[in-house]
Every structure is written in C-alpha cells, then in structure tokens.
Length: 117
Image 1 (cartoon, rainbow, N blue to C red):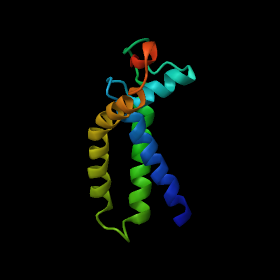
Image 2 (cartoon, rainbow, N blue to C red):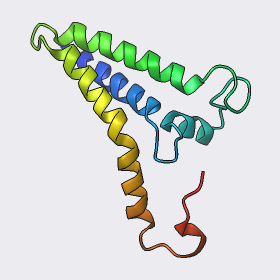
Image 3 (cartoon, rainbow, N blue to C red):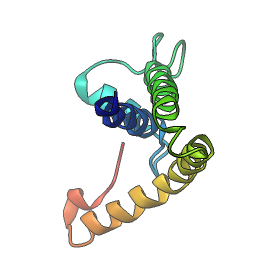
Image 4 (tube, one colour):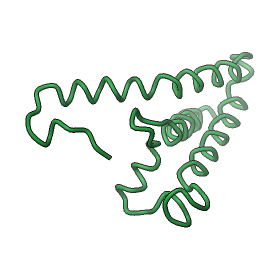
C-alpha cells in the first residue's frame, strides 16, 4: 500500500495546480484546457460548468483522502498540514507566476516583451 502514496501526492499537487490562478487571473487548468483545445467552460466563456475546476477539486479530494488514509498513522497532523500548505500554495502562486514572467521577459524586445492572454 505504501507504493500508492506517491500517486496520491501527485493527485493532490496536480489538482492544486489546476485550481491555482496566475497573475493574469486565469487558472492553470484553464490554460491547460485551452492549450489542448478543450473549452474550460461547458457553455462558452464563463458560462455553465467549469471543467478545470471540477477536475481540480476531484483530484484534490482524492489526493487528500488517499494521503490522509495512508499516512495518518505515521503523521497524525497530516490533514491540517495538507490544508495549510494548499492554502499557502494557492495564495503565493500568482506572485510566483508574475515574478517568473518578469524573469522570462526581462531581455525581450518588440512584441515578445508583452504578456497577453
């Protein structure tokens, strides 16, 4: 059963990244869905079901349940630590993407120096 622990952690991290917003107020899940060619919303732009958020919440819940069930005997405070880390990641992710954009676009010239969505 210990071999499944890494899969639950991967589900948790992937779900958290799907839910995280960038500095331009788009979720990473929306960007991934748009890149693949799947619309992130069921009824057009910001209407209907938000597929990337539903998938992100499902992955986070599966990751939390699996990780807590697997590691609660060894680490009794694992649930509170997962929740605190998830909140911190969702809070600092927009700042990280903004600073990464500044770093990547620092020496750019012309149209490539503009960040657009």
